[in-house]
Length: 388
Ligand SMILES: [Zn+2]
Image 1 (spheres, rainbow, N blue to C red):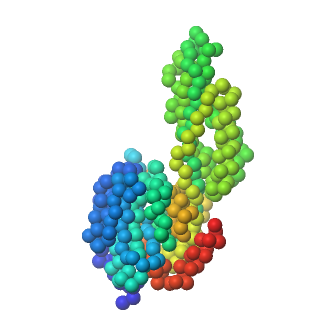
Image 2: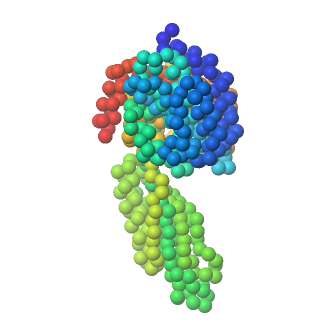
Image 3: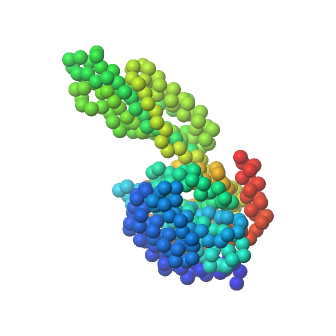
């Protein structure tokens, strides 16, 4: 039996257990940084299968790293498991963690790691809010990693991705309260500043390049209708397909915010919150995965902007090490957007669980390609350097 055959047989043998884990995580629907039971489900399974598990990584209670092997190359598989408030697993992260864990255990059971290679499963909390991978990167989790991979559920199967770089800001204006009827002239209106800012952003959109997004909400619009607002607050995200372009757009965005402060006499405070990079797809790695996708019966499509584009903290990982953020079709023939109740239902269907097992096979076999095929690894590294 070849390593690839052994790996596929191992996924078949583990299938009942893996589906059970994914179903439990679906039911737990724990949100960002609260994924206690979900992380435990995955890390306990890895521990039982002989992996060395470190918990509380980077000071995050629901992060873990599970490792097996001690020789190069070192492949990391990312496991996400957080749900969305109110919607549950409407992004299918119950499947992501299980795909990576299944692939890692099957890789170990194929026997290759007794001779060559190291596998880590990086349990990454809070993809939906907070960006847990950014903290894990800062903590050095990926410093000795050669290749990082993950597969996300979607309505299509592809090894490639397009994702926005995003900077999220907290924007605050400070004015001066006054009676809105008896002494309005003594007030400095922080809501005027905020409205000017949103109007300015709306006008700025005319002069922005294609495929740039600015979106936000006012979370504090004042204190009472008979008081001139002394304080307002908004949360605003700015996105572009490349970090360099994003930086330019953010400068213009800040100029609009400053102009609104000046014209109203308010003080402005801008606080940068989450900052995620665009996904840098490693093409040779994505092609290797696509060929493994085909070998397990998946129809692979081209990733296009029109399919819809978001942001992910995996972007930051792919800027640091060669990596991919791939997709598996879990909806069969229907096109269902993520972050909807319908997508959540699809993520708990028999079809999704069978797709999850095919994804685990394809991902595990791609780990084998990276470990066994020195030429491929060289191509992956050369490609990564060329892109930098
Ligand atoms: Zn997601």
